[in-house]
Image 1 (cartoon, rainbow, N blue to C red):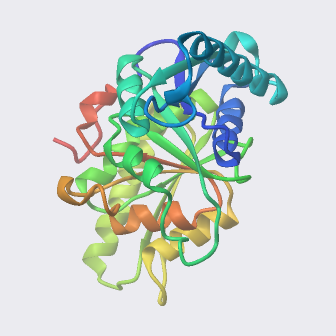
Image 2: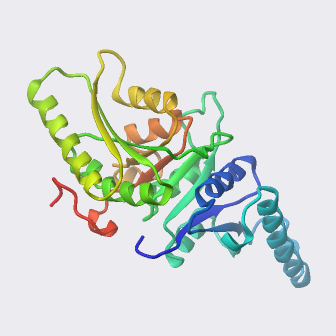
Length: 291
């Protein structure tokens, strides 16, 4: 994210949930140096594409570009900030490849808001993109987009990986003119753990403030429930966007996200930005405690 224009890739399959992803991108782009790229992936071996003549294929592609542009107009997206791209191949592979090729700053994907036995599945496509993308991925449930970016939430613990998101949060906060709220949830009364958490939270706050972003930090004690439940409850009561890290192992990526990350994504009613901890150097800053 070292270039002037912040580029967002939004996969569009013309489902309602993908429209939520586009609306979230629109809210992030309004009045800012942001470009939105709407990507539609055609699966070449699927109907009706595999029965089209060459001429019909050309017409279909052009009509799809038109449909994407019409969608942008319906959402009142500035045409100067919007472009379309149509590619052929497997959906997730193509999303990941195009995000790397275009050097985008993030991917935004709408996810299902179903509240049933499948509520702990964010969708296999979104799951894989979140798990494998080398750029941040924002997931947003259908009709849960936000246009108020006053607060960015950073759940923080003592792991090095969770602190990697701090320089990224600073860049996002500067883009969106947001305040960063560092939040740690603890259920132990161990004085050493609590003092370490408070010290780390203060380090993060100072680090953020020194870089020109307003920041608060708090450590919240809870007696019942789990850390992830408290984080989701906190977010749903204080709408904003959370930035979390995923800690999954490669061999299980295709099946399950890390427990904390997965449950926050599943249960949150606000957008969640996920990053894979791959080294803070990617974001061009150092963070206290990371070496």
